[in-house]
Length: 376
Image (cartoon, rainbow, N blue to C red; front, side, top):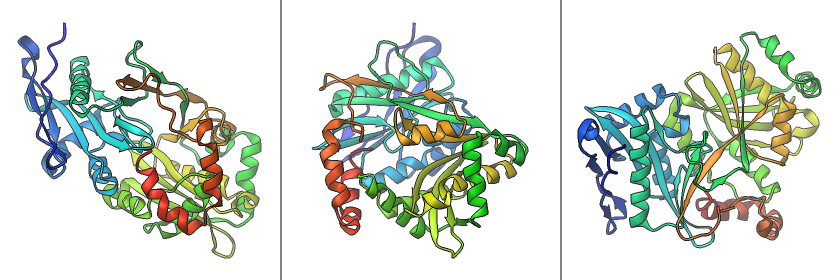
């Protein structure tokens, strides 16, 4: 039988920031297990947190401590980054952020703006303590729901979201072998991009990338993240975040992708394309160039990221020879009867999407950050 759940941390409602969380578990062998809270200015503990994350098989790039600084500073969401420790050694982490919106509701999420999240732990006891801490925190914050963006299902009796899948595939050691592993039709598109004299280069500034990204999402009728957010990702994660830009024969930007690097994986995460990119096959060339460079660096996994079933991005990744793996987002529902559907596939947002497409791009880029911060 597992020990009793840790006590709920106090929340400083006057300052709008969580107070320190520190609780001992029950008696016996588990008595040394403690749940603590990472403070945003605690660099020493953040380094220990990240060392754990890099060594924990169930942890992902989105469990790194840097997300606390990015989310708090760029979106002003309160973060609660809990870790469980025994005899001074971290055994698990759970990054959480509170998202409050009049339009989309009030949630405690692990983690907004991330495709993966939830508990990353070495032991079942550590995982249990962290999840219990999250549920106790909900008693104080009183959100509509708690959302844990797990890869693997943890609780068969919790409501879950089965809309999303992820696409991951091994990067082969030989460049030509990776090219031949792409199905014939999509491989022809890659070769078309090469024949069109497209070029790829790394860009440490987000100006060109943001222009491509913002125009792309505007055409799809969805609000754009603020430009400062993308620069914050590069600044926070250093060499683990990178922008690749594809240019045409005249040097014109056609396509871009902001990728993350974690252990032996590359994760293309945010992307954008100009209208002209389709005819020149710049999108396929972009992902091939990213894969080719990852192969040269000795990386082992290409994580094509999350897609909703039945969408164009889902079909595109399938056409590249990637097989979908379901994501198991799990929920505790407190003030709602069903799992939230805050995504463009929801029919009730179709009028909003159509109206957004008609906005001038400058207006959309100004208004978008005020909306997207609440989507997470």
